[in-house]
Image (cartoon, rainbow, N blue to C red; front, top):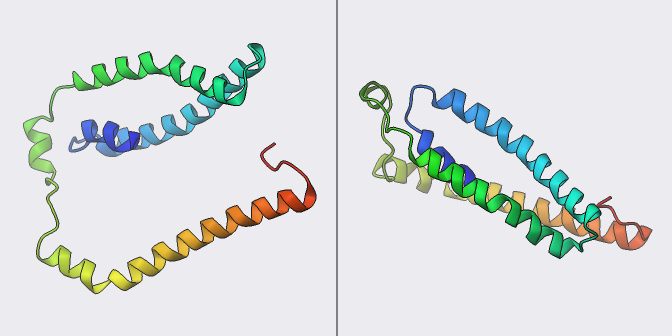
Length: 137
């Protein structure tokens, strides 16, 4: 969800590919950074996991709002960017035919992914119960 919101501001520019790559790297880095801050809060202030999560989210609410405000101040794409890029539109005609033609395959791939994720989660729970070990650590 956050990716879509942020990327909607940078899409359609001549540097969109570079900005998207930088955005990917920043999301990977920020994931680890937020987890480190949460663990630091939890250890230093002796917080439970639930209270630590709330405090961690509270720490990042103001900076997130501030940066959304700043990204909203970006100028719209220049005329050259608009000419070089095509606009996105709703599925029509040929796109709908493509989806109808490959609908079964798309559904099978989606179901396979869901079953794989469900199986891996259930097997992790079973292993933790059998071995008596917390696999999150």
